[in-house]
View (tube, rainbow, N blue to C red):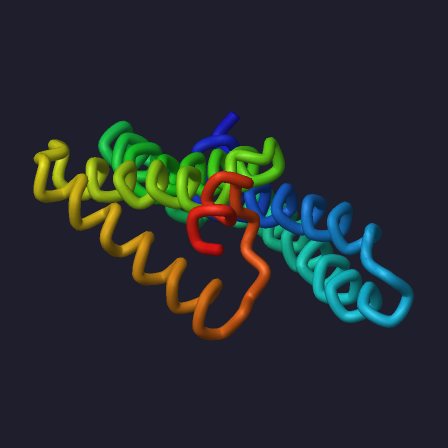
Length: 153
């Protein structure tokens, strides 16, 4: 049971989940593009498993306290959940602007523990600047809703 309190074990488990997702996503690429991300995903899988095995056998590995768990859950854990939510919103067809605004405002809320109107406006501004830079200037095909595309022309 002590293994489940070790930081390295849970980091390895998180990296293993990430590697599995990358492996799944790269399988959908064409033949010329899939080999490199698949290689990196397999390498990350192997490193993750070795990290977990090492944590199981290491008696002196750092264990998580209640305060450490709270910090991990509400810090990097919450941000990882937000980025996963961003990916799901993009997959659902919400579009770049709406999904990115929700995530940027959510991260600002997590950092400040409050969300003021200036935070909402600055989050919207950041998303709009990044959108204009990549979609309009660099011509990167970002997922946009039809009415946004008609509005831009």
